[in-house]
Image (cartoon, rainbow, N blue to C red; front, side, top):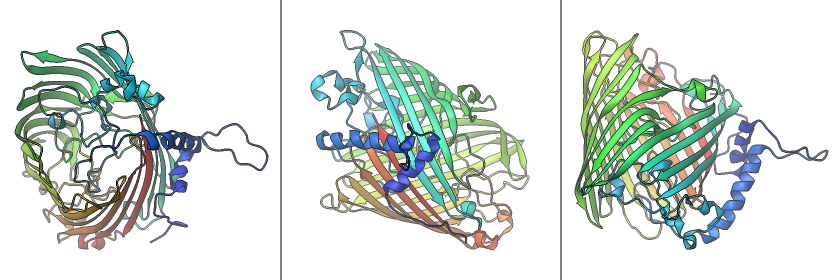
Length: 535
């Protein structure tokens, strides 16, 4: 195994500042012999200055969801006034709720900032810019800067030179409310440089991308909350194991189409019809809706319990996905796949749970589809005081088989889920996989969470391949007997410097099992550090 000149594990300023090379620009020339700061370093200086003042003045946040294993933790957000809805806010399908900024910024409601006494700094003023005296017409501005550095030894599990990626994410958005009418727009930029990075993917390097641009009409009618939205948007109404905006990527996943919803006190319904977005590398003109894809369906929600100590929700769903150029084995063609399942999730006292089961059927080039997917995750808070230790375990299963034959396809797939829960470095996909992952989380400080996790991975069907995160098979793995895919040790540290600024570090050591070892694949270390600043 070839190693980089040096490997540093930790949340060091140097590893964060390393991402500054993405910007490819410098400030005004410095005197002779003095190095000019890069654009990335100037961003870090600006973030630190804003954070220093905010750290002393920001109020304490409510605790995040008790379960924060490495595969599920997200950046915290500053307190926001939740929108008034009849269905419980945390389960309405409008963004991931873990106690802060939403990953999808349109899910936030900052009307609390109409009161000057609630504002702590000039950035708070940007969260509520009134357009009239009534307060029903206003604009909310949002933004994010994320500097990230990834280091991978033996990338792709191939014995080869290390890879270092320095990534820059920049988002800017505007949310315009005109009574019951709303318009939301968000632009994104993704920068990438480093060492041995190969051909950049468009979700990692993109000069300018319209992340979201939609119009919405919503309101209360006869005791029900109704809404319809059309345009490019992020969609996360479902378990992250099936649909996700893929927060780990520099450019997140969005779709183009329509979505409508109805909410009552104990019931909700959400219908949608989307096309995937095909990304280019340049400006906004090469990112277009892909007519070869379509994703539509309905998700329901029922409140089973909603008390202080017990919150349980059941979300049945029925979806349809079409892809005109999907590949199984050595064959590509049109696939129409149906997803029928349900998600049971919530909390009971100190226990949080998230269980999902679904069956998939359909047709691929005249061949039947019959596949299964299951995800069972639970975490228990041993003691809410002190270091607040939490223990958890999640089991993930995706069926496999039939990919290389001529009969029924038993290999499952997901419409738009990220694969970070199964491997930080992209070594594995949930297709044809069974994984058991015990974890433990402690919080030695209120602003610091430390999580370690061990993953053991098996192949679900020995006649099918082992798959990478992108969905491509490890060549020849379908011909190797055995079930052991590999083991991984994962560690994550999350430091919430202020409600706006967070620093995260990740480490994964992946050890190929008998199948991949037989094919000559190598062990791999993966390290990542990033700083995110949001307003």
